Image 1 (cartoon, one colour):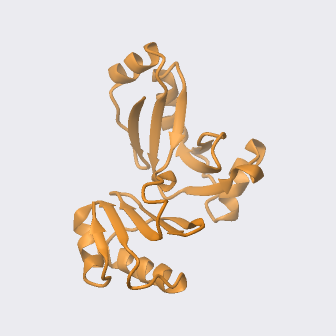
Image 2 (image 1 turned 60 degrees about the horizontal axis):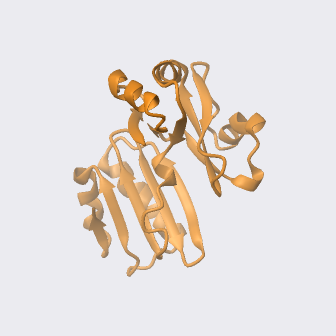
Length: 189
């Protein structure tokens, strides 16, 4: 499997690499890095209503966007708003199978009670797990460290994250440092 990362403001990838993957029959995982995503339980998912799931969460697709979704064989399906031009460009280079993906679907540490935060240049993905599984998954559009701290403290307070709960942080380490000042068990990956 080949993986490329698509940032909401634009896209870049090697057309040669994608063509080679498609020729080899490999699926190409396209990681959409945007906060314009929502998760839907598989048993409730309907392709015809995909845009509605985004709209319900205040993420109505814009005129230059289309809606894609992750693998429908999974327990949870990500519904994502993506640039129409970016989707067309990707599909023109990939003749094989495309798997749309979001960091919000990452299941690292899902087998323990913890919080996982993945920080990119354009979004922040927060996932909270308890003993029963995924408790909360939230994509956030953050522009600075203060916004990250605000959202983290609000979410952790609402969800009553104990001082002993580990918080795993990956991605932009400069933004992660601010959380280490306020939470006891921050682990940078």
